[in-house]
Length: 430
Ligand code: ATP
Image: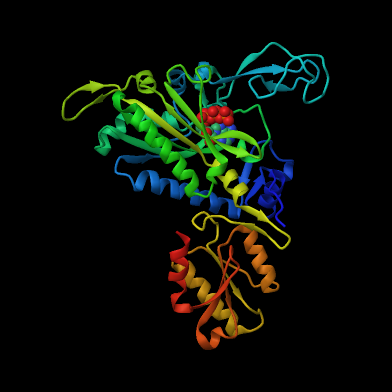
């Protein structure tokens, strides 16, 4: 019988198998900060690589950027982040815990969710979400810098550099993957809301007349991407921002939301930002053919890496009486295959298995090695981390040069010639 997935099960599996650890755990952790372990980093790198291939390498109208986290603070003044990037907060008069006023269901006339007292809350204050630090030894205001709260601004401020060096003409886009930092107040929900996270962002520069068709194009691309990495379309829906929610410069913004156990929450955003950003940074574009000078408009698709990982894990998780299996897309799975010598004490089998393992690694197929316990237990162990294929080298291999390949999802076993193994695996991992 199937047993439903819960966030607790995913959190426990992620910890137990080395996907995601609480940060600095031996010192009691740090709330809303997480580390990606040996398998988590593989999963994350696979997602980032696939995104980059799809949106940079496979498109002639896109280039990449890798900018620094620290920027001149004038960037954040011009972008509006210093004055506007804030949440309204109230403080419990008893325990002094702060809460976000705009969080669903929060009620200032009720008891404090933390201490349950009913002493009431302070007036709402705006709280800036940017982390501030200082450059150099002095702590005077002149050397304040911010950890970037989004990757997008670095694309805007490099607009002229990119135009001057890449020969790109409008319409074109710039993509960037990198860390962003936000001093979030609402906490919890595992890696959904972190203080330090990774974004994959695109600024797509256009003429104003093209905004609607470009917006629709990127809306389709966002959905195609999400399903391509294994997020179930049945759990996804777009939600358009209403006038109150949308930034003043945006004519249209939609969020792609994922159904987290009945609660739809944003995983990606898509915004038409007008020409607000380049105007703020006093940048413009001159058409190389017509000589026309104008400030390009922008469509911004924004993807969170961790908000990709969590839905992938939730949708991939299957549990029944016999096993827990992560049905990850092979392209996303940390290991593509695992190699097992049937027994540990027969030198010929172990060394033959080592050769098979090394050949797969040499072919660029990241492959696990496991020689412990019985084969059934080794299958279960690989199922739980989503390895699509398990390969066993047994006594017959020594005579027929074939191995047993067991499929994670169907659990069917096939005999495959050793000489055809790399091709067999390669053609099935995408
Ligand atoms: P929310 O309303 O959930 O705080 P947001 O509207 O502030 O999100 P954006 O500013 O649109 O988010 O950021 C773009 C993307 O960056 C989001 O769609 C999400 O994938 C990711 N992201 C934003 N904040 C966080 C966070 N604290 N932890 C993890 N990912 C985040």
